[in-house]
Amino acid sequence: MITKKLQLKNNDEALELLGQQDVYLRQLEKRCRVEIFVRHDPETDELYLSIRGRAAPVNKALKALKERQSALQTAPPLSARTGSETAAEETPAAPPVETPYQGPAPLYTTAHGRDIRPRSENQKSYVASIQTHDLTIGIGPAGTGKTYLAVACAIRSLKAKEVDRIVLTRPVIETGEKLGFLPGDLYEKVHPYLQPLYDAFYNLLGSDKFRFWRDDDIVEVVPLAYMRGRTLERAFIILDEAQNTTPAQMKMFLTRMGVGSKIVITGDVTQIDLENDKASGLLVAQSILKNTERIRFVYFDEQDVFRHPLVKEILSAYNRWESKNK
Image (cartoon, rainbow, N blue to C red; front, top):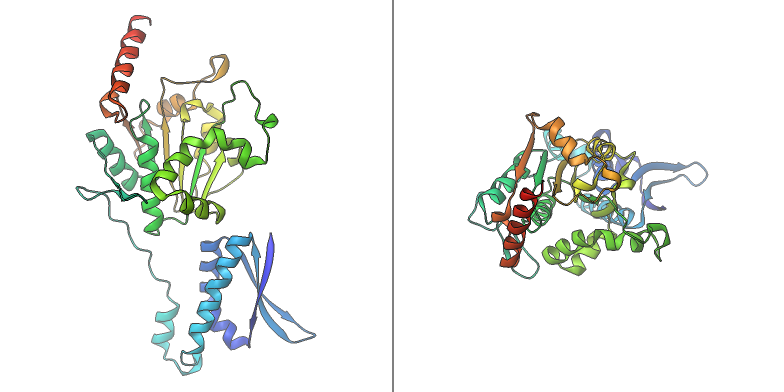
């Protein structure tokens, strides 16, 4: 955590800068996820703003305040403005509303110029559900675009200013090496487990843009275990590999949802890696939430796979084998 200061001339400048009833200050705190306080030093009679938080968000908030301060210096004094002018200026603008994807225009264009579109009917239903429901659960085999399309929708929503950040999570299932014995800090320890999520962002945003967003806390990638105790507001939250959650983990995750947030859960119920035949949180949630009106389930099958053509044949062969050996 760091703290930076912004010098103010007087109380009139503070009022103009912060807005009536501190409306601009509160908006900025929420947008940048920092704490801002007005401070007065009785010895020097100095008036200033104190901005506290992580380095990148603090610098972002300070820059926004300096730009507003500079713009206000060329505006008429507050006392010279009419009531309607002041009211109009202090009324926060409504956020832009994202237009749901309808095709055939691309859902998103990658950093490399590739247009991303849902290709099957189930993928189209999935994208439409994400854009019209606060909670969408996509269930199906690997290669059906569940995670990739969810990330594309998340970036689209972020750029449309519908949300302030993207949070990606998945359960860490250890096979052999224990997480605590891997070298490095937390980021380096969890990186191998979260690589599929990074791959989607690298492809859609480009590596430099993704690193910038991650370092600025616009995109947060965390293990599911680190979600406990949090409330995520105005966030686009993606839970990947949800078939490997326990029922308790799934309940904990679902209750992290805050005001203005959207959740997408993806999973493949044919690839449950939980030990000791533990119940899958995804299967339990499917049973509990299937009749909840504001939650949408979208199901994929091998016809929705758009990887190497051989993948469809492999999935079909396994499905036939599993049907015979039940």
